[in-house]
Image 1 (cartoon, rainbow, N blue to C red):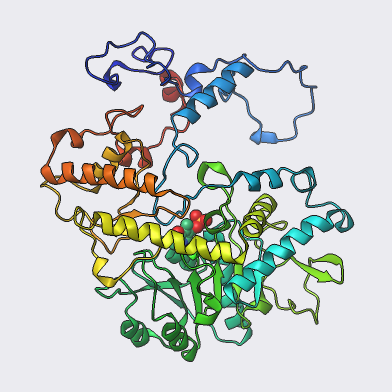
Image 2 (image 1 turned 90 degrees about the vertical axis):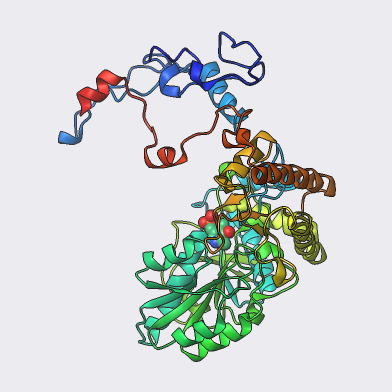
Length: 522
Ligand SMILES: *Cc1c(COP(=O)(O)O)cnc(C)c1O
């Protein structure tokens, strides 16, 4: 540890600006360094004084812990500073434009936060008697009503806690429907542009996953899909709008063909932001679709909060929806927690979670929906699409836009790294954008495009913000095309220089151990 000082800064990390003198602390004015918590914490330091624990008889047998596990000890101010300093090295939607494609990083209106923090919502417990949580059940019921209305579907399962969790819910409902008719099928088809969660979900549920190719336009190849359908295909998982930022115009024909072959249509609805109020997936023949409340309906995500992925279901799949669900009887809300013969959920496939889902997200999403109204939601989609097309058309002469000829994009603009100088790639552009003060766009996804750059501006950004971003991305792209060597070592102004991503992902340092201890443990 001798080359690391108290702050964790090492001389080779460099200081901003080559001419500036290195500081003693490694700090750069307001840019404060911070070491790992294991490096600054000391055993025995604590923020609270606790009485000695009472002696109790050992009950764990050989599971009992005999040596100190080395948890770091910090005082309260040290703890607060540690996490506050780390948070300042992070990027957030509240700091700046966050063009991460497929993620819909839109502004989270503060009104939603205010509503979610009201004691009547924030302090309820899932085990409270139903009579005492009528308002909370009302929120779930009303949000459910909006979701089925906006999508033109029959029912909704509110409890899944993320988009991927919703996918699993939909696939389990499809399997339950097939099982009910005694038709075991083994294959799920996914387009090659699918989000990684789609094939992962199908595989997790025990299905074999097969790819459907894309056309040169970036859409599902309908002929290839039809050719593959058969009695072994349980269903398809199709993202619409798709991850190339394009609307699947053949969706109705796709659904009809899948249904005619006895399968079901799962739609990945993570991109619903682009079509809310304009298109009802139910009209396109979709049987199940998750909605990312944390994307379309502005509830925080990433480091900001948990996700929520309700799944809307068609008439064919509604009977298999998971429990529990909220039912309204006159003015009274009740919870249907068990399968009851004769109930319309008599054939539920089971449960996705212990309780009801993400109550805080339901409250925020309903607040967002009601403050926008139906017309406002439609404008959300229109503005999101307008902003993305503005970026696509402003940059298509600077960066290759492989599907620009397919017509307008939906909510995201897709570029490739073709045409950059020898040895330069999408990664260099992403790193250059960090120096410009932006979180990079989604890179290397979707896989159907070489060195993909997927930019999703969302509707909450002003024209001035978009213009500045277009200027910055355009400038960085020009540097990559001209082969500017300084771009290869970007970022220059971030708290850390270019890191080895592979190493960080493959060999993360999750626990700090003194080298001697590490040796002793091995
Ligand atoms: C975000 C996203 C998902 C997964 O949603 P999570 O909430 O992150 O699990 C799935 N598909 C697409 C297209 C997405 O953009």
